[in-house]
Length: 343
Image 1 (tube, rainbow, N blue to C red):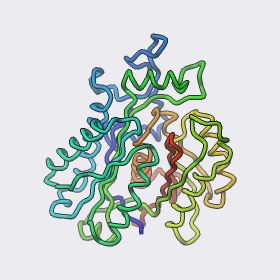
Image 2 (spheres, rainbow, N blue to C red):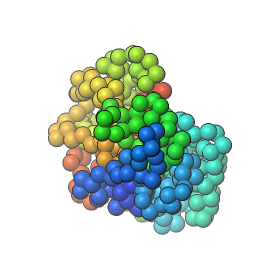
Image 3 (cartoon, one colour):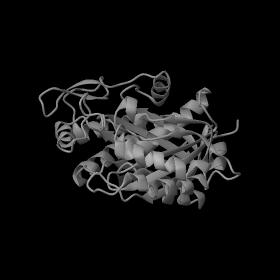
Image 4 (cartoon, one colour):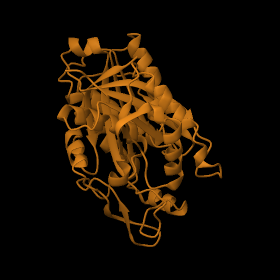
């Protein structure tokens, strides 16, 4: 069952709102710069980060700030229409975040919801880049079965933390001029509010995007093993499952990926292009926001929805149908199919 995206919010290295992020990203701006954090060589780490935030704010506290700001924007976009409705909140954080810190992010989000006079039950928490897709499937079922009226879905990520920089350096994944097979540290948060089409009409909430389908899969290749990335079985399976929601034989002319510069993931994508090529159509535009904004982690899939919704609303999307995907280091893969709504 598909859902209409009726409101979005985002905080990224290039924008203090969803609209700013989409427009600056469209303009081709690259956010990577020297951060006030040292790498293992004592040199400034190259990363994408939000420069308006206090440089002393790090780790989970920083992710919580980003998430709360993005959620606040998404809820403001409802114009108060979400009060007295059955609303589900689900959000995704990074795999490495300790349980207590993840719970603190959830508490911050509930406080933001209360400020908008919206009450959620305990938010549903998932982890990892693909976790955003895994948690969304059951929520869309609940929406279709009318057990809830709105689903508020998003994710938050921040590498702005000395411990994270050190961990990436130890793993050989920290980007620098002499290490290109790596990921550029980054940070972002994004949220989308989803509704049934009839609910959106009743609340007079116009949406420019439809979230048509969700898919999941599992890859054997991980950073901690020697399995070949060319095997690529999980990602094509996730994309095919997500594309079934499109119906009518529609093909995606736009792909929004979580790809960084890690060759393992790029090889996986190259194999996927061969195995799932029937899902793709013209102009076959491929976007990789993490290559310009920095690694997006748990925010990758929600931000893909934000970029698509804003591009269709602004009339600068390359195609009317899009596929988005993300992959967790543990092997999980998640995919979404998106389509422009008819005016």
